[in-house]
Length: 213
Image (cartoon, rainbow, N blue to C red; front, side, top):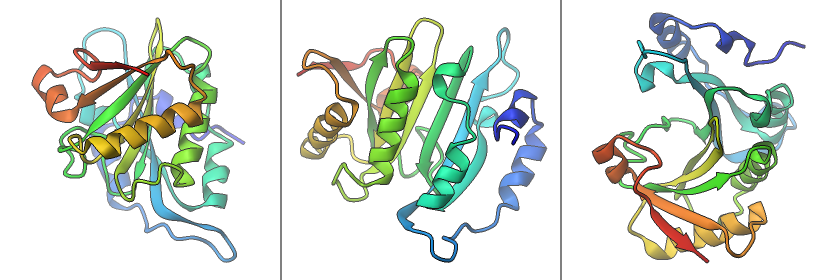
């Protein structure tokens, strides 16, 4: 079976991408399937070398949406693992209806925990994180918006987005659960950055607050 991301190796036109989003049917669990608490969408983005002709929003592509455990595995088992991606690429897994953008109404008052990974760890950490997210292991109600794995040349970066940046009790619980599900060493550096700060400096990962626990 062809990889579900093969089509993304070619540059889709903006009009075609918009049309695909507009006609995407409502996703529901199939007969006998195990429904998730929320529907989720996989997104993919990639920045080509050289001068950029497309904006971040234009580079985002919805790949699939799923509503059950079975639908998740049906898609996931055909996706290239993050460690096998090249260049400047990102996978995003967000609740349906939330775009993986700072300015989205569900994200704009929130922020993200950031974990920088040595090359070779991205696939395992990404899988552990998204399974914990789909399984509602974070126990923070509807606070979790989504997760991103960013493949870069020198390192890979995992981030978990939540709705309310200044609810410190909730962000601390997310941090502690994230450390557990990723099995991070005690001295791992974790960073938190609000989306407001990202908008100000137009950067996802620079000038973050660093926490060592």
